[in-house]
Length: 117
Length: 106
Image 1: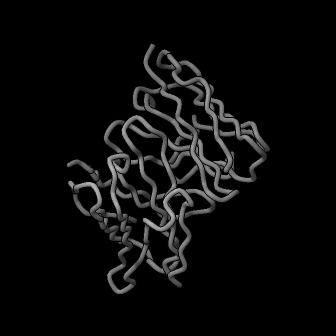
Image 2: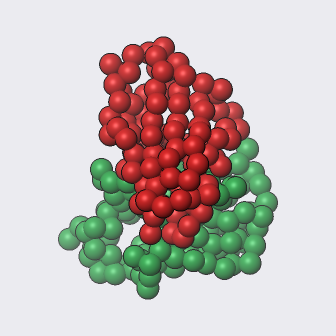
Image 3: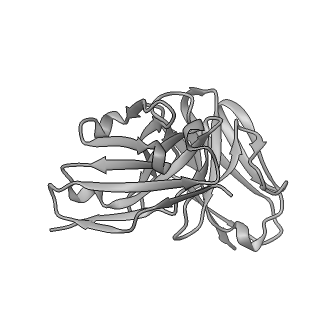
C-alpha cells in the first residue's frame, strides 16, 4: 500500500535551518509529484512547494521564496524539504503529500517543527 | 492568489442528519478538492475535481458546484465524520485552502 513516512519532530532556534524527509513506498516514486504543506497552530493549511519526482523540477510559494528548498533522492524514494532562517512563525506541522489529479491523495503523518529560543 | 472562504465556521449536527458545507473562491477555479482532518492526523482526501469521490470514500460524501461556489454534502452523519473539513483549489497557482469547517456533535 502507498505510504509516505516522514522524519521525526524537530526543535530549532531562530535563524537555524531544518530539513524534513518524506520516504515513499508502495508505488513508483518517480511517477508522481510530491507537495509540501504546513499547518501552524490553529491556522489553515498552507502550500509550500512541490517537486516533480521524476525530473526534479520544483516550484515554491512566493511567501517562502528564498527560504525553502525541496529536493529528492530517487534511489531512496525520498523527498526532502529544507526551510532556512527559521522564525517563530514557522512553528507548524509539516506534511508531504502525493499529487493526484489536482489533489493530494496520500499524506505523510506530519512532522512538528518548533522554533523557539 | 485565490482566497478560499468556507462557511459556516462550525456546524453542529446530530448523528444521522445531513450536513452541508460551503466553499467559495475569490475567482473562478477549474478544480476543487475536499479533505477531512481529525485531531492529530493528516488530512484525508474525500473529493477531487469538485464531485469525484476518492478511493474508499463512502457514498454518503458528495461534492458539487463549479466556478466560485462549491458544496460538500454528508447525507447521514456517522460518528466518525465529526472532524474539520477543508476545501482546496489547485487550478491557479499557488494552491490555496479554505480555513476549514468544524463539524461537531449537536
